[in-house]
Length: 460
Image (cartoon, rainbow, N blue to C red; front, side, top):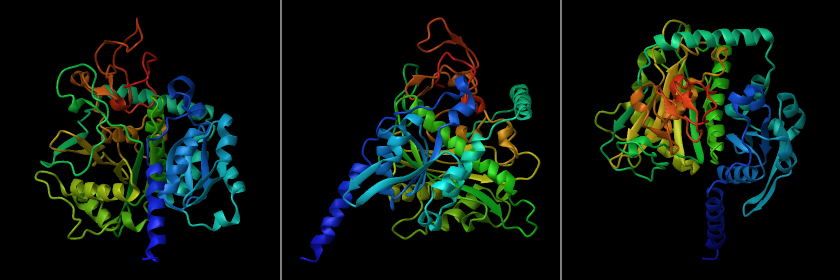
């Protein structure tokens, strides 16, 4: 009996620690400058990589909470040791000196770096020799990419591309890009249903979206195993899309922060060179019901006690991805888990139109599962930063949180985060802005626009 006491004490300490780590997320103490009002450079200026001495998920989340209290806005966690966050100058000293004494050890910030050069200077030999994830490396490289100064020629090309998109918008057949799939079952766990709609008619459940504090997001850049290799990812295109993906995830962090909500994402990145993403055939040809189970099986093997569901009328890809998310959500003790799949296509029209897969449970609660696309979507193609104010990945992530397409008048009765959707294709009085009217606002759920062209309201 005496031998069991230390084990029970350690287990109790861990459970108490975990309960504290995953409790109510603190409200953000910092909101980055608005892209529409101050531009991308100001918005991204204070992005930094934070290095920590954490060794597990629970301690990393506890540090995320403390860093939030001290004035950081943590966007991505790529391993227990590394985070991407906005760290304003006024909070830098407090962030850099963060120390926590916990039941499982002393936690601390090792460095705060605003560029790759500063990151290299700040690292100790132990850190240099430590194993890194793909996502760890990606967020460091992202700093210099997103903060690079634009030349006059860059600005000219961006303006021209934006004008092209604006001209093409009325001619594009914008399909519905969300599939709402009925499981016919009760939810196996509590779904974070979010805030109900304000006003309007119809089912309130169908017009609400979700608030999430801590999300696990798995990203897969699918690679063809065909002998020719003609559709294998171009390295430059992959780097662009990887950075584009980070911007899409960052969008929702800053959006939620404007309303006093903290969202952080634990990012699991599987790039084209990872064995997990190798597909026999071209992903755009074999389809999601083929490549998603292949990817999932390389990460999680089912057992007779833990097997993917078989729902009538729902594809294998959605079933297996939901099952994978369920297991990831449990392993990380997260509020939510979602996936994104991007396939490389060298030319021609897109074969995987950007779309999201969402399931609906018997009580009407909805759960985002994954989005999929290829690299020929008309706004992005092989250089998505030619139009940096458009981000289709942010749009598709919005669907996984419950945000509807705002293409047509009949979506004007939806709400987002409890605010009526007035940014659609009809004229409305602007929310809490007497004397202002809006029409055809081009927001993230309309034209993938991260900026918006109206100052009447910041919501969509």
